[in-house]
Image (cartoon, chains in turn blue, orange):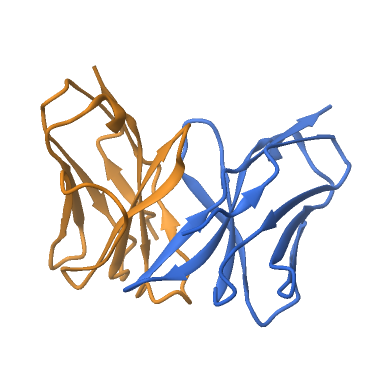
Amino acid sequence: GEDVEQSLFLSVREGDSSVINCTYTDSSSTYLYWYKQEPGAGLQLLTYIFSNMDMKQDQRLTVLLNKKDKHLSLRIADTQTGDSAIYFCAETYRSSGYALNFGKGTSLLVTP
Amino acid sequence: KAGVTQTPRYLIKTRGQQVTLSCSPISGHRSVSWYQQTPGQGLQFLFEYFSETQRNKGNFPGRFSGRQFSNSRSEMNVSTLELGDSALYLCASSLDGVGNQPQHFGDGTRLSIL
């Protein structure tokens, strides 16, 4: 697929909110995902949103979707040092089946 | 419920060798996908299997192949290894892989080519 764009780096203070942005490419994507990757680990599914929704809230996580601009964001409230990780945005794209097209990831650093 | 299990976690091989990686999906999941993660290219889709059939394939050479067994477990094989094949190989499973079910990932196999 084409490139899913994310900013590469974000630094926030503990207790602040973090907002990670993503621009996706496929307007026919049915679901959009956020994954978290900690050092030496695989991808942990954080949350996902169906394309007919504008917003989804799940405890400290809020996902906003602007379909017109193909823009997705992940807000983490009350960010903790344990939230430091790489966050990946992913869109579903369909060729002969379904696959995920990932952004390059945003490295979130939370400082005390 | 156990998550996606990948074995081995680490592998060291030399150029020209071949390697087989294994993935056990979450119980009940029938779709297994494989991804390659490198610092330069990021996460790239390799292929997806469903009911023992390859249903979707990414843009990788034929040296990369896979298969799925009747119990949904999957293996990935890379032949004639090259230095550029050094990567983290991630397996993901979902119920049916039709786009409306999230993919759950294992911790990956880190392959190093010397």
